[in-house]
Length: 178
Image (tube, rainbow, N blue to C red):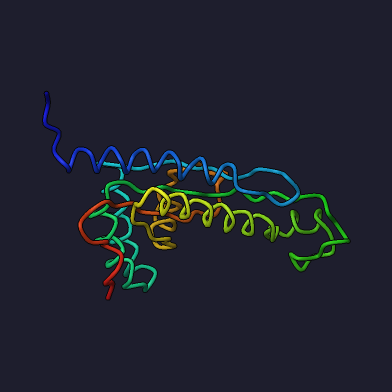
């Protein structure tokens, strides 16, 4: 017989949930059935580097809440990053959700196809639902996503990132945030 400490089991549970969170983001419905979603998981040194970048950006961007969120990232077991590239869907004049005449104008102006961020939102909603189903605490963070973008963690084609720190502790580190 072998004794396995709860901390080790909780870490394993978080990593299993992180895989499910990424799968949920991947399989979430996409507008026009086209997938431009990307995911990855940070732990250990990479997670701490993300928190460091959040702390660095706080005064640069004038967002003091980045400091608070960096503490949440540090106290998490893992952080899932979900991002999207900017692509047009070819709906052209019939759409106009980007406030441009058509998809060509959207691309030429460097505008953002509305469906990229819609798809990201659907993917993140599905992802946090998977975390909840696994009884893993989570929080959606613009701050950690912005820091990941600053660090280029997901590559240059990914233009928008949201982060989901994951934790399995006696109390959620994301609950009493001040």
